[in-house]
Structure formats: C-alpha cells, structure tokens
Length: 111
Image (cartoon, rainbow, N blue to C red; front, side, top):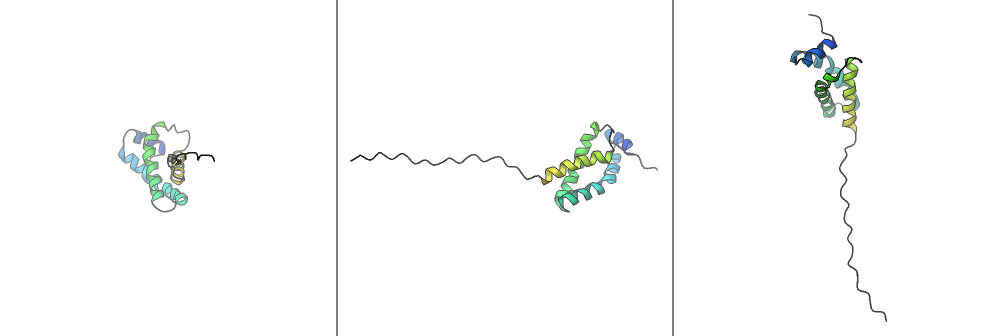
C-alpha cells in the first residue's frame, strides 16, 4: 500500500480518522522531538513541547490551507511551543509592601 501524502492525511484527520492521525504522528514525531531536544535539552521539556505541538496540531489542521508544506506548519507550532517553554516564567507583581509610618511624635515644648 503506498504511503498517503500529507494532504490526504490532513483530510482524513479532519474526518476523524484516528489511523490517519497515527500515521501523521509517526511521520513527524521523530523530527519534532529531535528539534525540540536540540533547543530545550533531552529532558521532559522537549517531550512536553512535542506533545503540546501535536495536541495543538489537531485543532489547527482545520485552518491549514496547504499553502505551505505540512512540515513547515508543524514546525511553526513547535517553534511557538519551544519559545513558550524557554521564556522565563512570569509571575504577577507582588502588591507593594506598605511602608510603616511612625506615628507623629508630639512637638516638644519650646523652651
């Protein structure tokens, strides 16, 4: 059986064909993980970025028009995930500490 091209796989994934998604995943997973590991290191961050890429891909395929190769589309998603994973964590600013103000001292009687 010939290997389906990317456009065929996209159409089948959009039609909820789980086997097509499995083929798409198997086709791109090694390259996506290898790139993520080069950028984020071989640990859990690379795996998390790879997983998030494929989760996002499922939802994003409905907007894929085929005007760029599918691998470029996948790697655009991965690039954003890598950026998110490598960006410093932002924390909401802590409310400013209230300054302690000493109670006014009574004026000393002038002599």
